[in-house]
Length: 379
Image 1 (cartoon, one colour):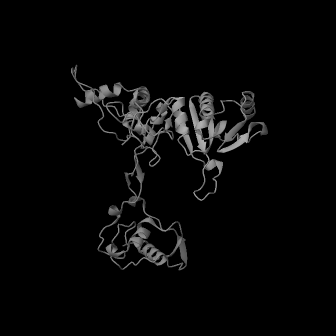
Image 2 (cartoon, rainbow, N blue to C red):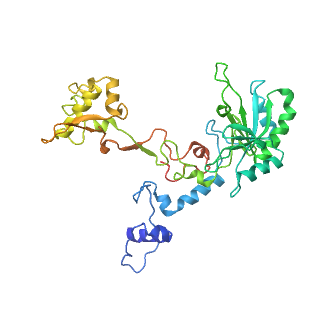
Image 3 (cartoon, helix red, strand yellow):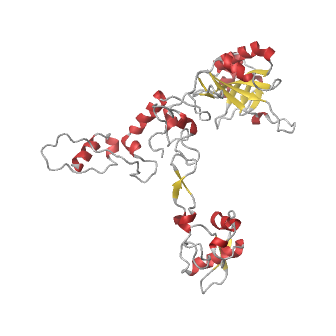
């Protein structure tokens, strides 16, 4: 029965997916009725890469990403409330909420079109009546041929207006906000000039920037967002994966409990699970060299070492070379070998703060019965 259920399940896959799935021969039965296809109930890797999951193998993952992007309700990752549309008046109110007299730049984010040259891009801006362009946080006059790097993608923003936050300027600010939304396809950036807290003005590239969106914004904190796309729900893409674990849900690190054999013993007595074992002369020579170089007492029980000494032992002191005596009869000189932690002592563990997807994608559909944005593989 299981073989027939699995066979029916495999037949439902695409030809591309079938080549990666081991198929079971058809059982010797004339007909089996009322049997549902076998389904996978656990996310596990069937290939050599941890990015291969049941969802990617069956290609259901692509449909879930579209479902989350199109039907999910975006929530603010900071306030956990549903996002709403931000009007021009709301943007003006938010701009005027900063300390009166603050100097602001109203910016419209833009990009070079595919195949467009920097010269034609600048000529188009000049013909449209724009005077200044902000490139990677620095403002330039367009008629001065600002530097655009052809070899990398620049962060480009049209300077719509330079204003001072005053209630008396509300009418002008509203007109500039409308123009910024129009030039930025519904998105506006507001950069505010600040100092370092000691009266020294910060460089323009270090000014804080707020995002205003005509389409999506948080009603609580006013933060603006752009609509999410299916690719931002992918744990296999830099646009969507978690910055802590790169979309894998786990990261490599030292698990102290797995390394400690007996904390009541000293390092020389075998308190740690070392590779090679201390019975090997090379392993003992490396441990003695490590203790000599770092000042760790090798004859003191592990549980009596100070917190600093234990951090040095498990986390190291930075990359350095430690001389280890050569154990051959023909050469008594010291060879310089790096003391490294054996691979076996670095198991994969659930990463703190790792959720496979970035916070913006996790925040969508996190309430009620809306589609969850934590796409398949996000565990």
